[in-house]
Length: 465
Picture 1 (cartoon, helix red, strand yellow):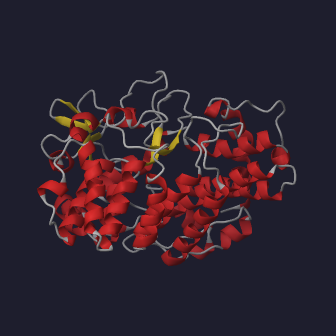
Picture 2 (cartoon, helix red, strand yellow; picture 1 turned 30 degrees about the vertical axis):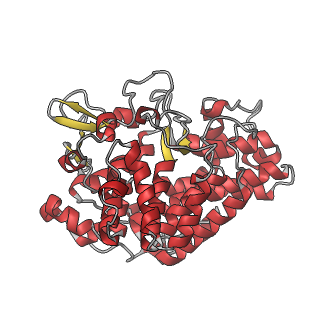
């Protein structure tokens, strides 16, 4: 990353971001435009710097890349467009046209690091605000590195804004990346408030800033991916047992509303046009799929639902012979804000705990967790229909529930197929000649290869460059 690019990036949360924050969380613009060196001299502008990281990310349709593009890489969405827009669906990515995650996510990480450095270098902030902002920065850094390591394999773990360090950084082994993710999430867990804080750093109702339970939830997911079953259970317990704050909602149409009680962390839309986010406009079909509106639910996903599944009734829609995800209900722009983009929610933790308990041999407890999800979906309970289910069959049942519960949310299906070793088995019959085992990792973008000497000759297998 060149010095001039780095200089521009460091100013994003402090200058352009500040101007965007009046909408985002109703943060008032500072009375004078502070230079970046002065942003952390008071708690208000320091908080704006952190909030603008979320605001900048949520301004554009790229905020749903993980939900839309990874669903195409898996077996959830079909794409009726043409290359390069169709490349994720056909699993024909290339390192020139398909830079939809690397630069975007490392930009967010850079911004979070800039906040962390500014906060920790400041003597003007109170301990509570300093800890909260530091915790948020570490959480965001860990969260986006989690996606990068799962999409690209060995990657740099960026913890600084020093351009010389960034330019020299090479690819870190996956195991070391995960060690850094866990370290950051553990630190964030200790620093973050257990409340939902508003822009004034007071307890509020908006669930759009990560809190302690978001760190617990993300750690549960990371431990699951690392097959650390016991710690995955313990972290999931911490959130699920907080029944005064989090609960599964009986009305499925309320789950994705802003600040629903199932929410662990949402991001507030900050686009002046797509006031309810980009999920509804991207997924809801009101004319046959084409280049202009290319996405539709795959037949594999549509046919996977059991008869009577309320998720099919409430979270999918149909237009002519096509079907679409309908978790988000607002397609038209400029509507009153009723939906925020869901990032972490309670149902995932029940399924994390179910899988980890199964791997630990605690099948009865695992069945109870799966039944919590099936009960909400209006389906027969495993404890009644199949109480003697074996370990392997139960693991398969859990993966099916993950697919039907978490479809088109932040790429769960794609990552699940990869981590369980099922991607080739499931996708090869669907993708045909387009499927290669090297498709499990995405290509490192040409811009990174060209700018960073440490990446010369380090492209992922199966791609040029």
